[in-house]
Image (cartoon, rainbow, N blue to C red):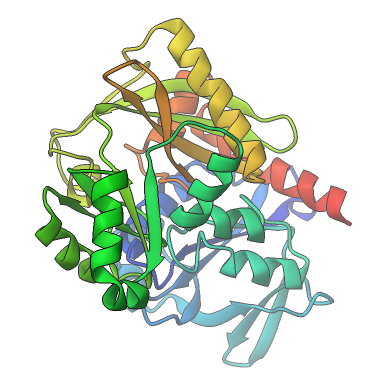
Length: 362
């Protein structure tokens, strides 16, 4: 393929979220598998301090963070100017602009998955991989997600949500509500934080107060959910108006529950693909995932996590992830590999869906 027909794709990683390190590992997998014959790839790294750089060094230096001190970085940013439709690179001899055909934000959590960077792409008129502003914001906010799923009659854990400042002033009232509606054990979570960050499991009333204050370090909005004893399963969804669901996978956590450490650091957490479920339960999970995906306004991709309740076998939606992990051991690419779509083809499809959606919106 000759150079002129290649599309310019910005692959963006890092960011100021608590999942900065996971993003660096995810982007390494994406960069190692993207089709370089089809795309001119521009790597844009965002530091934890929020500085933007074009990185022109070796992909192998990204995962451990050494890209920042490699000497191969130049200040650069995506301009919100729609006429520019791309990126400004602050070269020593003056600014250089690059028109972008699409952007792929391989970022998790705040500023990457919550609609903020998506808003920048919208202003710049740059097509981008993944959900739009509203769907990203709603899916990262557990209180909003749960409220939408409730409206759609999609089974999920019972929940209560409130702002932390309200809790401090109405503590007994909220603690009574948690006891009466949810019981123990329960899970206290920040509404907006990914990857099990800031979550506590509480066995009694006294633990809830500390758990709320701990969660409030990550977000002022708090969600408390009942404990569901069951199998942890996940399904990957791909597409825009007519999405498809992958085979269902199961997680057997090494820890008591699938916390951040079990997710990224613990070798003993196991993934089973396909999940140990009946065909009809798997089919119900796939159908429910697609229903939730459409209801939440998702496009491009999402991983939808479920708990299959032990008491009656009912699949209950746990949470959607609009930019799931893309590491070598992450469920999203593994589930599609098991469904017959390899990593390079998957990345290709995601870029194609980004361009398709942008075409419809013009």
